[in-house]
Length: 193
Ligand code: ZN
Image 1 (cartoon, protein in one colour):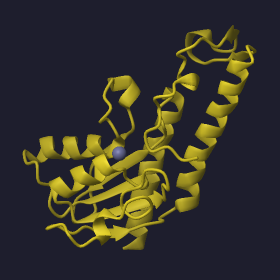
Image 2 (cartoon, rainbow, N blue to C red; image 1 turned 90 degrees about the vertical axis):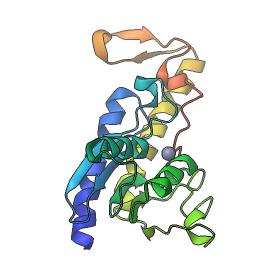
Image 3 (spheres, rainbow, N blue to C red; image 1 turned 120 degrees about the vertical axis):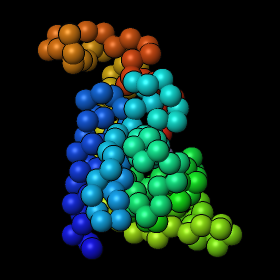
Image 4 (cartoon, rainbow, N blue to C red; image 1 turned 45 degrees about the vertical axis):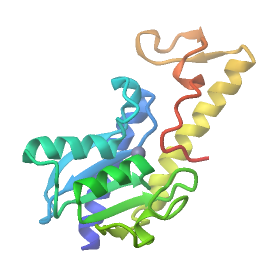
């Protein structure tokens, strides 16, 4: 079974990596059926979609619900690179998934055991099997590197220096303007220090 979790987590990590280039907090998720087949995969996209609920977990649950024509996705396994926040774990509970596999713990927002322990309280009428720490190092490193680069950009921005940006201005030095993704204080989804 562990082989399956690693395989699914590798796909979730590939999803998360897409977020780096897009300036999204790099979190990836995969939803698999009881037999291990992938139903949906996604990465965090609150910026691109202008949607505070567009965490990777919510996006895969929505897609799976649409595909199954059912808001309950019983028997499914949710695999996500970072421990889910309250919103996402709440959605997973409402969807009645069977199992949650996550990579890195999130001491700031994690609702599955690190900051809150929703699943361990024993007060809910649905339980989700929890498998934490699959490829924890790799998952944690991706997001830590992302915030390290962003903090460095923020520092340069505050000092009024110039930075290299990608896209149409790729490889040109341009001033970093206020409101650039690197200085956006609202990007705290699944934030890891
Ligand atoms: Zn979330």
